[in-house]
Amino acid sequence: MNGVPLEPDGDAVRALTEEALEYLVAFTEGRRDRPASDFTGLDEALACVRTDPPEEGRPLADVLDTVAAAGRVGHDTTGDGWMAYVPGGGLFTSALADLIAKTQNRFVNLWEPAHVAAELEATAVRWLCGLFDLPPEARGTLTTGGSLATFSAIVTARHAKLGEDFLDGTIYVTAETHGATAKAAALAGFHRANVRVVPTTPELRMDVDALREAVAADPRPCMVVATAGTTNTGAVDDLGALADAAAELGLWLHVDAAYGGFFQLTERGRERFAGIERADSIVLDPHKGMFLPYGTGAVLVRDGQQLRAAHEVHGDYLQDL
Image (tube, rainbow, N blue to C red; front, side, top):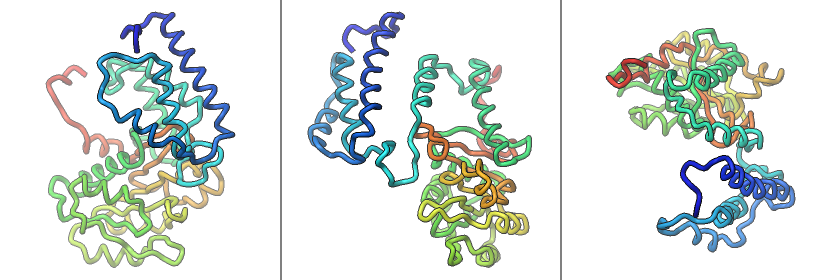
């Protein structure tokens, strides 16, 4: 942006923020009156962003015009009139928190550079573990969404159950399981054919007897993926029965609770999710049930040391950290 230094002083920060705030206030106040979908001027808006990189910056007002088009054209998936998909949209307080966090811009990949900021994340993860009655040794991490959280859970299960020789390992899902699981399994190195689709009951829940039959036919069963609220219908697998089967068959029990997990906060939800506290790993999407901005995911693992062992690496540059 013309005339804006890379390290602005207080006056420049105030001026930039006030200009952006005017746009945000207008956007927020106008949201109730806007349609859920609006494609007016789509071609023109796309042409504005399909450009070569400029040699010089642009005034913030010009940039906000482009941002305004991005916020108006298409589906307003966080607006009052939008009823499709699962996501719930972000609260403004979360956006404000994002502004504060990105302005402070602390490096939290390691504990040493930002002790308190790192502990904030650890505390939030402990809250989530407590919500699902996981034991004190449970750990987890926040991610950019359920897909990456699922990938981390599968890598952890692979390491814990199969070690380095995992190509013949099998994962059990149903036709109702979210596609992120099959994608994550492929990225984690599993053969696509080794993601077994177990039949469901008339209620679209995993058939536990069919799971036992499938496991009996495989040389190296690894994990079973239960769902606490499918994307298709909201169906909830019999988590208690699957926990019993997983313990009996030596399977890692993973629960995809990305959609429905935060109904655990309600009495009805806790009743429907009985057995989730026995999971080896759980995936959540706080950008759904907790209304945080896209994308905010989380993975929780019952045995935190298994999560660490599956992902830990070493390097000389880390020797003092």
